[in-house]
Image (cartoon, rainbow, N blue to C red; front, side):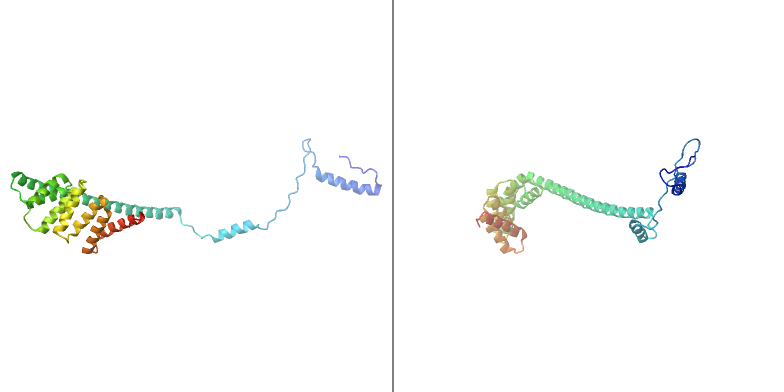
Length: 258
């Protein structure tokens, strides 16, 4: 390899510079290897070994973690236990609801059978033609409980026509007859029967409540209020009359009719 010659410089200055140029060239270019030039490896800057702020924060976070985390299997066992407890509560609640519903159904079936048996026995006496007013009343009451209102009204009318007993018991017949008319939408007839009941027995709270209901359905709100108020005089703790009276007053106050 030829030496580098500085042109236009004195000899004593050119020689050292030539020597320095040769050293620089020797560092920049590596010897021939297989007929090709190989570049010298570049200088790698020194790494900063001081920990950065993010590394220090990560190290602090790692030191803050507990030494031992719970095993995944233990977490799953706790979750399974909680889920099993909740399922047990749901299952218990469902069984309780089903048991209560079953009890109600069985009770209704037994009551229905008892009513059917009583109605059958009473019907045989009535068909025989020797039924009394009390038996007509009992038959009418059974039909009311079975919600067979047409037959109930027919038997209760016969009971009222043939009744020769106490007036208070006759008031119960008229109240029952008024209820049968009320459930068949014969409102005027029901009002007449309820009024007859309270005439026979002025302290008959149930009849006063029923009279208020019938008058309310006829849109006679003033008359209904009077009936409910009379019921409350006889029985101050009567919640049925109190609630209905309050509702009527609220409705009338909104209409500015109170």
